[in-house]
Image (cartoon, rainbow, N blue to C red; front, side, top):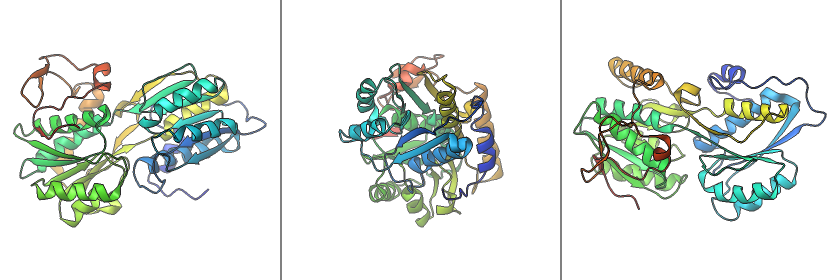
Length: 361
């Protein structure tokens, strides 16, 4: 295994994510327990898959010889992914993580074929006795980004490089817009949907198009650093995605949402080793440690301080983000005053809030 050169590696390794301590393992098994991971993109995407692979390596380091991990990268969200899950199951993996939403239905089929093997569907919602789901409340971080954008944008118009029109992406756009409007009620958000999670060429082109339309801050819900790099080349401030991408835009990245999967993987693998694993649904945010923000840089100290306070308010529950009255793009109120959107509604969200320009496919 290559040495992991990453800030706070030792701290994360020792603690996992806050509140996700692994159960104690009395002794290692005679043979290592096999754990499989299926990735949508390459481990060098420096975003979504990169961060999942960091989590896998943290778990491998934590458990040492007690486990043996395997990963398969660049697996499309298409029927052929089913054979990848079947192959990992046939090879004796006792716990298999599928790290993208589009794997869900295929994982359901394979889990039914292998009832003694545990499966975990990342960002999925369908469960079985041997199929769990896990996710991060990314929208919390996007709200913080929106607050920063509202403070810094001179035009009042931000650009969002979006991937595919699933609820997770809609949550992110809405949260960003609500954060921006909390400090600038007249703010607007333009987006380009590239219909892919990872396509550096399309991601970069989308960022260019948004900048050409007058957006002076760029954010993204795609996996490569291309939008950030494109923005930096045009001297436009931007946000990183999934991991701290500061090295790609040292003078222009404001912060980044950081997905910390290591603590969750350590916890769930530990439960398999201890014989206590159960099918659960986990949706962690700032409070769980699964979601963090990269350092606030390239902004006034007052803006950074406001961002820190915003994170604290979300953690404490003072700021619940999706609180009515919320209006859609036509001005219709879809969440009445005083109501807080519940997780069930959030999980199926397909309504864009007022201020967002553009239509979902």
